[in-house]
Length: 150
Image (cartoon, rainbow, N blue to C red; front, side, top):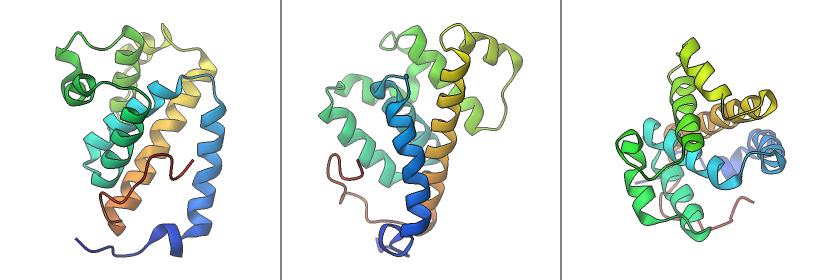
């Protein structure tokens, strides 16, 4: 597969604007492991091979289990995820699908403060942006090294 445009080289200004959001999210109060799982789940939904490769490598490097990674696509049918993680996945899926019913909001609010919910939503919208950029411009999958964009 061939890279259409190297957005990390030729789109540095655009990517730097997203980097600022990433730096903010790295300091927010939501656990990094949960954010990484959300990034992985949204990337599954969007079919972003580059992001799936990247986040699976980062998750494994930070101690995530293979079992949870393999089951994340079917998280509702497994006992492997906490209620808070499940709420985050429900929210991420709803925001990604641009359909957030009141009952979803009410369930998620049991696990996240208002500020955390704003941060979680920002994380979801940001990974959706990365997914769409990568799907459009096709960076070479498999080239990511753990921590490369930190």
